[in-house]
Length: 111
Image (cartoon, rainbow, N blue to C red; front, side):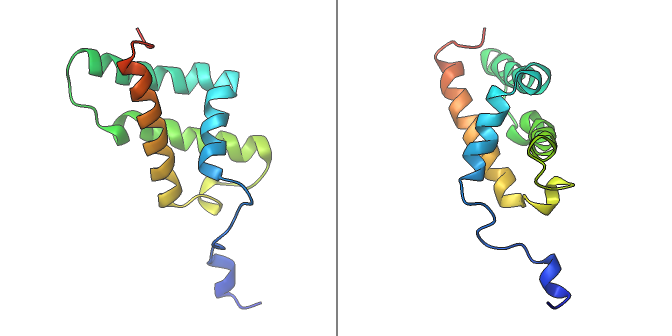
């Protein structure tokens, strides 16, 4: 094995949809949900109700980083999230959570 192969991430790192799996984890892990997910989504709901602009990265960025750390630790898949998740994964997770939760917020789910 050559030294540069250690730093390259394989194209198909998972045999499942990691974006969906992380999103399910965030919603279903009771501790993570109460401490991180719900407060972040509640903040977005408050901004939406107040008619203010919502910066997805500002509202969800740290919560997603915390989720990736918790996910890696819980399932013992990497020492740090950067070993398994790239910027594209992070963006896809953010987009998925934002679109799904905004749909619920518009329906009045977060009051």
